[in-house]
Amino acid sequence: MNQATNWEALIAAKREDRDSRIPPEWKLPAAIMAQAHRESTASAFSLLEKTSLLLPRERELTENYDATGLLELLSTGAVTSLQVTTAFCKRAAIAQQLTNCLTEIFFHEALEQAKERDRYWTANGGPKGPFHGLPISVKDMCAVKGQASTLGFTAYLKKPVDEVNAACVDALLDGGAVLYCKTNVPQGLVVMEGENRVFGCTLNPHNLSLTAGGSTSGEGALVAFRGSVLGVGTDLGGSIRVPSLANGCFGFRPTAWRLPWYGLEYPFPRGWPGAPPTIGPHAVSARDMTLFCKSLITTSSWKRDPTIVPSTWRDVPRKQNLIVGLWLGDDEVPVLPPIKRALKEAAAAIVKAGHTVKPISTPKGGSISRGFQISASALGLDPHNTLMQLLDDANEEVMSALAPIKTMLSERPKTTLEDFLTYTSDKLDYREAWHKTWSTSEYDVLLCPASRSTAVPHGTFGVPFYTVLWNLLDTASQTMRKLKGTIPTSYTAPLAMFKL
Image (cartoon, rainbow, N blue to C red):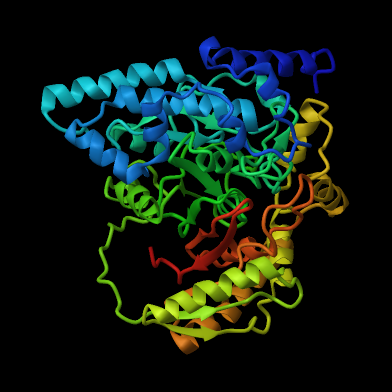
């Protein structure tokens, strides 16, 4: 630990550098900014209506299309990448000022990249790849050459910028995407509140006084505000799905080892045996989640990432009658009425569409509290306690959301081989309990809560009981917005292993 380092000065310099990358003509008036804080119940959308920063064409491009729709326009030359990228850079700048969702801003580089995409289209008469000309945002832990990855750690302010791209970033760029910003995360990456000492707290665009979730906090807020229509998140225990449910967008966690993970920053040592992390999309439509996954898999991602399963995309015929399991939650952590109502309404719509819905109960040995207990024990399987060491390196105060984990890790005895074996055995037992539920009724999908409630006030989300179990089971799981309103309501739909 370097006691001589002035960490507060480094934090101030980092924030000043980020903010300086927003062009002066894109800055919001002081009167609007005075309402953009974590105690305000205003929505970022209502504040946007008080400014005319976005031109009519920019509002049309950012509000009326999903990624698939924009790509159709781009592929035919109906709109240029420069036009689309300018619109989303400007809207992302507004999103940052209202919700504090960005960590790295590289709009200038993005606009130059967009011009290159347009030159390619002119020279070749068509798109470069499946993401041609589309601006895509990425979570802070995705390494982008020439940009920093701080992961919300003050200690990482002294780390050089990344010299190479993460595998997923290379795949996006080779597919013609335009990258323009990186998004905020919580301190430590393992909690559900998007706040850290370096950049502060990310706010929910629907109600600034509510959490944006975590750990892909910035992506959730940015995509919900439509400062992006397709973003890259990661998920270790709900980090894609919780921000999706809190902010009211679509989020998908695929099974592990399907999409390229190699080269992402991570606060655990190489070889850590916990639930395998995955990347996945934040999107404004269900079809965009398919677009993202299919495009990455068809690029033979295993050639970029040695951990990826060498399996191609499979277009499976649509089943005429799906068997859908309806799980209204675990009695240990009962869900609140808005969530239960959303699940029942979704189930009724599924039945009306001609499918079969079968209620299920929590399997014996498969309670959500047991799932969280097993998952949490994996955090202690780091003999170096890397996460806390990074905080100690900068003499960084632990924030309230991370405090319980610090207490758990500090009180845990030194890791032994027996601890590894116990974790692995417990995980297998848990998977066996849920496998019996899957296999006895041959469910195609489960419909279940993504959380016990909708978005909550900052600092009160607590434990992600209803998402972490699907990481432990390694099942593909997506969160979908169910209701329109002031505060989004969502549900999640896990699939059997490798049903991507």
